[in-house]
Amino acid sequence: MTALTTGPAQPGRRRPRGRARWAIVGAAVVLGALFAIWAQGRIDGLDASTQATNPIIRWEYVFERPQTPGFLRERTVEHLKLTVIPVALGIAISAVLTLVARRLRWALAPITVFAGFLYTIPSFALFAVLVTYTSNFTAAVTALTSYTLLILVRNFVAGLDSVPPAVLDAADGLGMSPTRRLLSVELPLAMPVIMTGIRVATVTTVGLVAVSSIIQLGGLGVLIFDGYQRSYTTLITLGTTLSVLLAIALDLALDRIGKLLTPWTRRAVAR
Amino acid sequence: MSSVAIRLEGVTKTFPGSDRPAVAPLDLTCGAGQITVLIGPSGCGKTTTLRMVNRLIEPTGGRISIGGTDVREQSVIELRRGIGYVIQQVGLFPHRTIAQNIAAVPALLGWGRARTRDRVAELADLVGLDADLLTRYPAELSGGQQQRVGVARALAADPPVLLMDEPFGAVDPIVRGRLQRELLDLQQRVHKTIVLVTHDIDEAIALGDQVAVLNVGGILEQFAAPDALLAEPANDFVASFLGAERSLKRLSLSRVRGLTLDPGPVVPLTASVGEAKEAMVGHGTRWLGLIDAAGDFTGWIQEEDLDGATDLADLAPRRTVATVGPDDTLRQALEVILNSRSEVAIVLEDDHRYLGAVTVESIRRELG
Image 1 (spheres, rainbow over the protein chains, first blue to last red):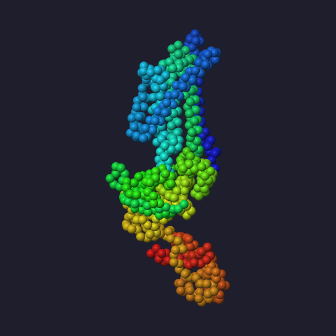
Image 2: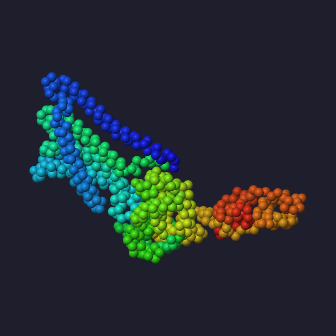
Image 3: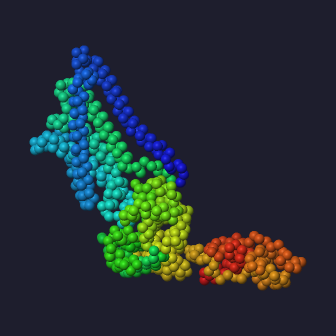
């Protein structure tokens, strides 16, 4: 055991991963800027009147229209709500399904097949069917929740399966009850894989929520559809950008939470 | 802590879907405060047998008792908390610090913070772990250190019984040897009833007070102390399992102290030159050791040294001698003899008091 295994080694180990993360964000910003330049070039080719009325973004709309900030905030909060509620429900349902699949191994295949089937239904179609039976909000939440199940169940099961058998053997041998073993050993050790699933499900849902605005539930999709119907590019740009930023922000926040929940994974593995 | 015996009576195990038992009716008594080693080839049911003691596997038939109490009399959870358990892959909790790992059973038993902390510190000291390792995570420790933590964790609630499943199988040979010696030192202090599974016959001989040699299907071929096993294997299976070099292996088990020592070619300093010459002729050697009035070995002289001498006390004896201590093994004694031109190892207590001499012949007599 040398001093190399203590403190100083940790930041060195963490830096590459942090850098990769910011590289992705940076790449997104650069790509966005390139797209804006390209789009601006296209617009430059249009005749003056169209160009004046429909640039890629009309900054006056953002900064000089008094009701804009409130409008954007409301749509963003709606979007956030329509993301968080289905993901939270998805986590709860997937947790139950995972426990069932753990107890009855044969149940895992049907559960994943069913979740996979739900995942293949086009979201437009699912919304359309569900609104005929229930309220718009329930329909949207039901549809969005069902889309999270496949990712979440698979990651929950994979997470629990990733716990080393020797650790479980030791836990049993020391006299841990099954419940205690699940909560204090299996769940924490499965957490990295579980958090990965929650992050993927969240980012996916942010994208899908945009579609749910066709049934008048608000969210940033409102801007995109409005912009499309009125051929007003600024709204499309704003809706898309805010949706992407929301996805990135939630992903980073969940990554942070995941790291806080699993402090042991950040220590250097040195011998 | 008083020691308890583990008694297996007609214990059998047949796994579902198998028509042949993994463990045939097995009778075995693991002596209180002793290390009982279960050894045998793959499929001999040694691990199954071990795991039936703490009911990680439920026997199909028979009775297992610890200190006279049937293991089925209490809940598995209670039973296991009272039995130390060490496995080859160690199975430390990766998300818990070393201190938390050691304190696993105390935490289950609901010990207070101060009591737990004191116990962790005591155990870390007992198994030779630096206190500054206690705040680390298992992945930051070497394999040998992890295994020490595994032993400390098993001992945390001071259980009378310790089950060890190939505890040193995953570490390199040098560390393994050190951990084996540490376990024996530890056992000197804690006197647990230890059941240890291994497939390494040298480990079984080095650690076991009793060794149970099992054959495929959990058939007990022989149950004896290591020396008895090596001296008189019950059958061909045991003999082949023990391997060649049984005599050499036995040498590691016996101490020089246990030999009937030769008086050796020595004379007291007070002897006359004539008596010294006679002694050389008598022992058939060309050298002679000298013993002073206190019984200390002062050195040795050659035949030529006696020419013209009048008093042995006037001679300057040579100091370099091939010596062993009474607590050295016969293997060490043989090594000394092979490296000595005189083919004799002088046995000195505390490096000075003369006890006698060891020759190849006296070792052969002991093994015979």
